[in-house]
Amino acid sequence: MNPIPALSSLASPWVTSSVLTLFAGAYGLVLLEDRLALRKSIPVLMAAGLTWIAVAVAATPRHMGHLVKVSFLGHLTSFAEIFCFLIAAMTFVNTMDDRGVFRWLGQRLMPGGTSWRRLFWTAGGLTFGLSPVLDNLTTALVVGSLVTTLAATRRDVVAATCISIVVAANAGGAFSPFGDLTTLMVWQSGHISFATALQLFLPALVNWLIPAVILSRSLPDGHTGAVPGEAMLEPGAWLVTSCFGGAIAPS
Image (cartoon, rainbow, N blue to C red):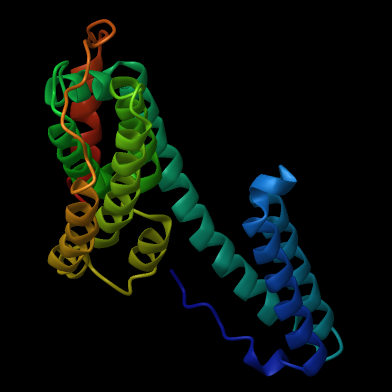
């Protein structure tokens, strides 16, 4: 991909202040997403569009429209690459979920009668292991739903385990280009290689283990109840899983 030309020559007080205001406003609306019942993609996309409008307006009197066009197309291409990758990856993940792969795996690792501590550590370890491949948010939601099903009667266990799951998901997603949108963007832009990202494995593991050890001390004695129905793999489960593994392996 051709390098994206810099637009620093278009910087002016009103452009700079406008862009910073748009960024701060969009970021504030994202933080208030739950209270406003507003999807965070709406303010982000609006701020992005208005930012490019401000840049284009600043470029017109200086006859630098071509520079803005080339830069915009470069950024759009980068976005399209990430978007297409995520669409394909999430299609695989959702299909695997629909075929019962994650429910089956969860019941094999966390069967009925599991102690609270085993549930805690298994859920965290499973999240840390899957988030580098499946995306950290998706992994946290899938494993979290399994935990809430198995420990529905113990809110203290669910709270401690879900906190560990969130920490493990973010830590596990940090040492893989596939684990988080931010790392994916850095990898796609060519700033790091897959091997470079893997060097963060030990720091990421420590970042999960320290909070997990502290949280585990609050867990009570006891075991989970019976699993409500045995999870069964739907036809095509292993085929989809194999295709997903084959798709990401060359990366």
